[in-house]
Image 1 (cartoon, rainbow, N blue to C red):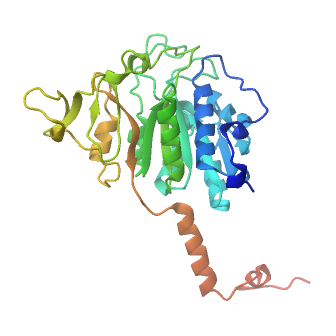
Image 2: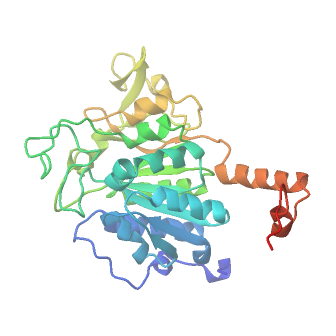
Image 3: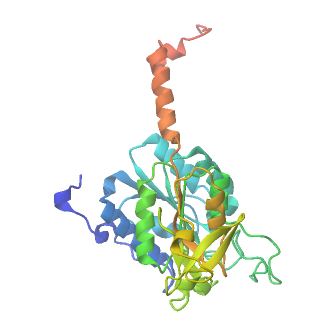
Length: 338
């Protein structure tokens, strides 16, 4: 058992395996920031399990000095849910990608969210199937040209945040692989949330979808094209911190502080804890030329699945006279075979 006296650093969460991702892949940054978040949270390694499905991101388990299970395609949510319900005291982290979670694993994903199992789900979104060499994914933009859409995909993409809220999710956050501090902060918040937490990581695939997020992640433009949401604070962004967001009727609108009588008091205040999801959906749906929302967008409290299961089991135990399997086997009609 690790103690404060033996305080761990992020290096203690690294396994002896060398990451086998392409040089420059965003997965490296996510791995390092998860390990840093775990160290700052002082999570016990022998009480932590990392579960993954299939895809480049799912190699993650091999690089963690914790318990881990590299499962099968699309089934990480189901396995992670089973791990958590079997041992609710574990810190369970699920590593998945936009294909693994939202295509073959879509059904498992939405039901894990609906049940509100206490999982920390990190969803790597590079808008491509990287491991299988460049097919379009459920988050690829319409018109995207790939090996499986040579003339451009005609499918509308999922927004992971909309799926999360549609499944009555209690926690959704977003970060970019390059934004190391934001990533550490949201991973810590996700871990501390009691319930299913979804963190979408906008992540670059240098081989099959390089620079997919440069429009918002480039250091010269990111301040004007992203907004870091902070609970209880006005929605301000821009290099000069002079732009903001207001509600005009039912629509969001970008304004400039100091123009047309606009002051900071006119701006929307971010409330991540409101149960009513309409504003959270609006923020999730912002795309350039609106600033893309980063940070914790939604964090509400609802009953957690494994707590309800344990409570139900204890209640049944108190009401039943059956205490052993032998007693259970004799309930109802029985026959003696000679």
